[in-house]
Image (cartoon, rainbow, N blue to C red; front, side, top):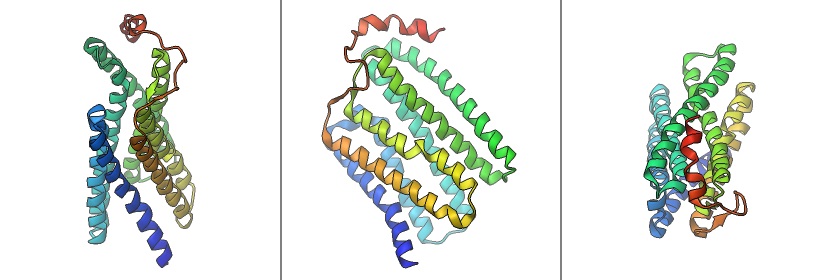
Length: 250
């Protein structure tokens, strides 16, 4: 029992201590200027972790803790949408009109992905006749699923532009894919398990998040390089810049 408690404590605290290290490395290398929203996301995760750990230590009422946890999860998801938008717009940092056009198109794409994810996951939870509290978490899982779609589109977007992705941006995407890409799957698995069997899934979830944080730390320390996620012969900005507004208006 003591070993299990220590394991849970380590898997909860250790990744968030590493988040402090990532934020420090980003600040020292100036990466917080290149990815300000991701930097804010790290600070938010650190702050909410301290808050939740304090509430857990004080043994507050379960209902109050769950409400705070819901707020923290919602804030984290909102910031991740900002991170994805930041990464989508980063190749267009020198073209403000085109960036605004992309922003409007991305809003529509995001809305469609959210609607599809909510419809799919909502139908599953409705069929299982889950109570309202669980349905609230189902909405968060639908948003996580929509973000998985945005993550895939980000790689396709860089390939379409014929650009090589910055290594730290690649690290952000890889870490988020690990941390939250498998989250809807793990939640679905836990819904079909009895309560006594969900511990393994919870430990796996926290362990994967730990690995994702290590990925962020590695790419923050490694320094800026280009990652070949696109075509090997990048095309000039002028070749596709005039085409993007036409494509986004289709």
